[in-house]
Image (cartoon, rainbow, N blue to C red; front, side, top):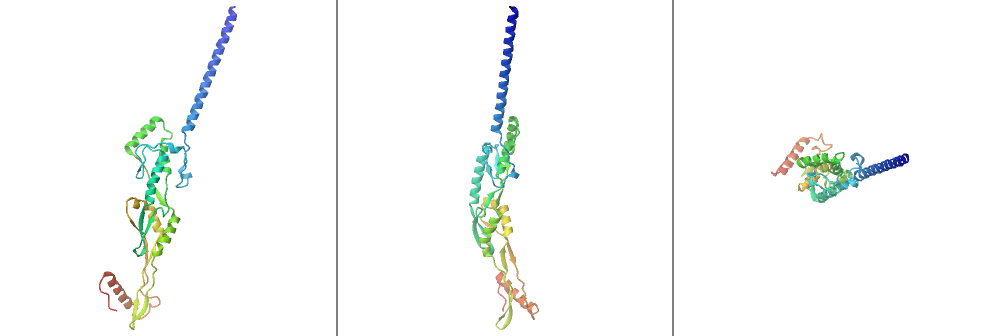
Length: 276
């Protein structure tokens, strides 16, 4: 009778141990599943800048990550905003700059109205906001808090880079500004009242398109943002030879050229022109 009781009691003990093990395994599996679910929910796949075309923004869960306090993109305060909100705020700021009209001074002192949007301006580095949000990657709660407090003191400055679509800007300037270029004309030997005279050629003026685009790409945004109104484009002046072509050996040609230049100089300085 006692042996039977011990056997029954031992069987019950084995069942209790098995039950406890099953519960422990279930709890462990539940915890693992919970950790995996949390990691998937909070993890954001990083898109490297080098793999993304300039000016293209990929909308992901990153848009919902808040930036640290005291964060600026150029002159735009984006403290505490999510990546998506910050991007929208910066783009709104840029839209105002891009649509502002200003003037380009070209040949003959003509002025042509334009906006940066007409010159195909665009935001070069929108991904910089995402990169700022990635400062939180790989940091535990305490490290994130410490970094956040440090940035509140020092501030986080994200550069705002703006440029122009080069070919589109070249086409616009060619169509709307180069039309005021002045063609250079050569000097001539003419007869006035029976006497030989030199008629000096006309100095040419031509817009340096490539240099103009480079200057607008580098400083056009700051120019408009600072409220300036007339952007002077670079011109090349083309000077003709004073001696008429083919008359280099004409008797007294140098004296005739000097006479013509003296008269032209007097005219430009407001003095009385030399007698013909």
